[in-house]
Image (tube, rainbow, N blue to C red; front, side):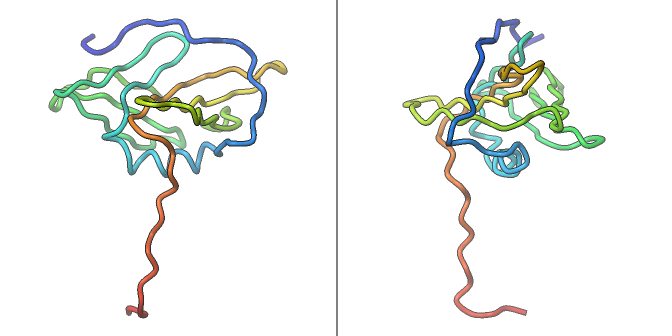
Amino acid sequence: MLGVRAMTMRSETKAHPQGVLSFPEFWRWLKGHAGCILSVATPDAALYDNEEMHWQLGEEDGSAVIQLLHGKNLVGEIVIAHQYIDYVQVDPDGEDEFVFDCISNTDGDCVSAYSFTLAHAYVPDVRPMPSRLVH
């Protein structure tokens, strides 16, 4: 498959840090920044962006669906059953790439089940308040 490479994820135990997001909060934000995704990885494989591809994010049967497309052709898909994600750890120290690890607590160990790399840091989207009421 074009754009998909197997890779080994880091599996070290992670502490629950202060700067974290819930998966629903991260997912809402990510859907507005799909064009900023550089890669999405699982412990078994990774999908990598390039100029001829684009990301499509959606939901199906209560799961988050991430698709990498080349034109209208599906290159790869990752489905996240987010009820198994305890939190999203934000790497605040990135310079060119920013990593968001979806942490799952299995058997007492916190491990990165999914990892998103984006071109920019997490900045909550702020919607401006209208200066007057609109009907």
